[in-house]
Image 1 (spheres, helix red, strand yellow):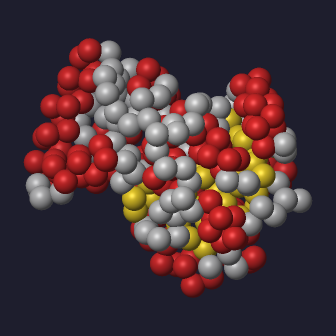
Image 2: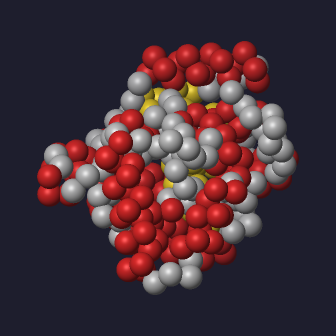
Length: 272
């Protein structure tokens, strides 16, 4: 559901003019990805919805078609498989895609050496390798057309190590660093890159990561705050909660930030 208490996409017209007709959204089946898809459809973009669960994507596509009159393209893909990632670029070659929202990803929690190694490596594949592959493929495409936008989902945990979410935080540090490096590389050819670094989000993420998130931002708040800043910043902390958490941490050295977040994670994982 769209949160009408917030200002709708204030930059909808600017985004369409800047990036073109179509947007690719990964992780579109739920959570933040779904919120991005809803808002971009509302803004008039044609959509390519990407996630593993085809039935869920088809239901979302039907809902968006009933609202906007245009049915999104659905691509069922497992982003841990490189060939599936490459297929996304191939199957959208006929579309004027100018915006990539790489919202797919997941987390784990608990002591790293007590976790499941396969799950930890799979998380690196999805959160880092697949994201880099998509960014490369669509970044080249956008550079050739000399305009485009790329949204990469970072996190509050990207800016320091986080005990009990060590590997997840490391994947988000990769995303944050990639965005910060790519933004000045691609800006001269008309491509905007934005890292979105929210705090805790009330979505299915916590359940999969075995974290008890009692309060947090809504996925819609993250999507709106991010899209309104695309093309204007390199990093955005969308929403009041993310900004408040940033303010509470920014003056601390990395070791102190890590210690503070260790206490937070201990509470979240103990209750999960």
